[in-house]
Amino acid sequence: MYSIKSFENGFEYIEIQNEFASAKIALQGAHIFEYVTKRGSLLWLSEISAFQSGVAIRGGIPLCWPRFGSLDSSLPQHGFARTEMFELVEVIEKDAATTEILMRFSDSHATRQIWDYKFVLEVKITLTQELKIELTTTNKDTKEMMLTQALHTYFNITDISNITIKGLEEKPYLDTLTNEQRSDKNSITVDKEIDRVYQEVDRDIILIDIKKEIKLHTEGSSSVIVWNPWIEKCSKMSYMNKDAYKEFICIESANAFDDFKMLKSQKSHTLSLIASF
Ligand code: TA6
Image 1 (tube, helix red, strand yellow):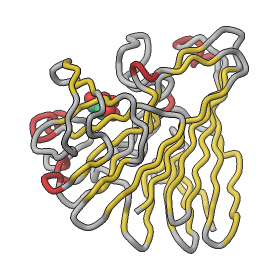
Image 2 (tube, protein in one colour):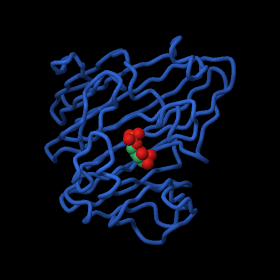
Image 3 (cartoon, protein in one colour):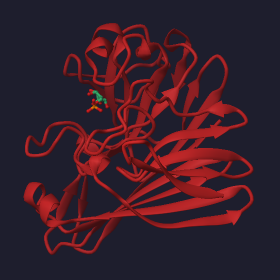
Image 4 (cartoon, helix red, strand yellow):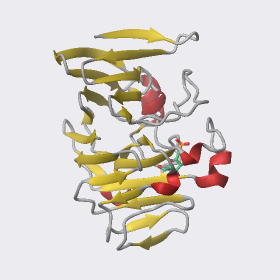
């Protein structure tokens, strides 16, 4: 079952419940900010996140689109999709344990003022014992489109000092804190700020927490960002308590930097993630 709900300020979200999972998805940004199964809550959400028009929710899976990062100074950091209102196209309850939600966002006069392209952006979220999110961009313009994007997922963890990320060993990455290109033969552990853009990613990633193991399978992507602000950066982040860095790790399935996509007119590209735990 599902229903459309809103906070006191009118901020709308869809609440979904089936035999395996429950979830909450904001219409703004098609932003899933809660996904819970009997094994626990997969996504981290800031205790002081805003839920207001034009402000990105802090946590869950923000959509970075049509840009990842801030290289394109004409667009907001991580693009504009995460603060735009999506249309709820349909909710399909495929069976007692599987719910599909389709949401859509198209260009407008306002979007063309900041990014002069005609497009359709569709988000399909499938909720069952695993979470699947598919982000499909269709270039409805006559000119070719360059796209960078990310599913900027905040994963709930027990303690940042006690996680291991496997699957990125030996992969080249840009350390955005030092602007160095590096690689590391070891699995990732975190004991300070980390902000890395990995390339040539071609296998599943496993996030090992003391209470669960999360498997990430991505299609349509060969780049991944690993981010935790640690103490100092966390204290400067909007809508984040000072100790929030202990509670989450971002592992972001992306088409970022060298993994950008060129879309010819009428062509589409889908970036998808299946997270299971
Ligand atoms: O994906 C990592 C990152 O680019 C970090 O550098 C940090 O800026 C984070 O995203 C959060 O960005 P936001 O715009 O959501 O505050």
